Amino acid sequence: MIVLIDNGHGGLINGEYTTPGKRKDWGANGIIYEGEFNRAIVAGIVEQLTLLKIPYVNIAPEYRDVRLETRVKRANKYPARKSFYLSIHSNAGGGHGSEVFTSPGNTKSDKIATIFGNEYENEFPNKKLRTDFSDGDLDKERRFYVLTKTKMPAILTENFFMDNFEEFMEILNTREGRQRIINYHVKAIIRVRVEVFDV
Image 1 (cartoon, rainbow, N blue to C red):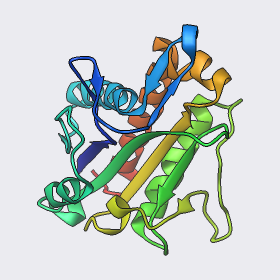
Image 2: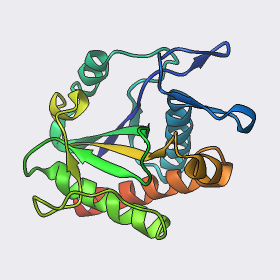
Image 3: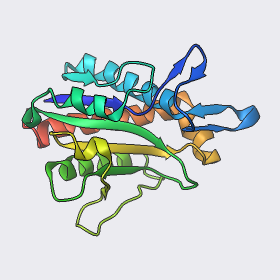
């Protein structure tokens, strides 16, 4: 199994953020750039996967904002039956909690998303998992480009809300909080490897 990891949006280059929007300035309490957060989480996941000898590919290692078409093209070079796509994000819009997204329909992605949702709830039992059980499983379904254009199973995690002050201060802008997000992703990947790919 190969984990194709995608840190959404661009990062910081010489102190300049490369993606319009996708940030929240909390004044004296700091500012969060989603692309920087996404890269920090992916870096932590990559470090643990390396130690665990679980194969992975960082789909967008650049700090510039890589086009979605490029990300998908890179991913689709890998065997669909032996890989899955994992896109890392943080949310905005005034809510709270986290979400796991898949493309519409009943696919292998749903099983992977359920594992990620379960591990999130294990790591953050007192934080909300925003779900949609209308089709029998916890993931939310959207036609996001990276979920519908990739050949392999694909999920997208939205990890808390940048514009929620409590979540920013308690989780998103703290080393401990970020490490817990990394940990639940890695624990989920370990389970996916065994329960979905039989490795």
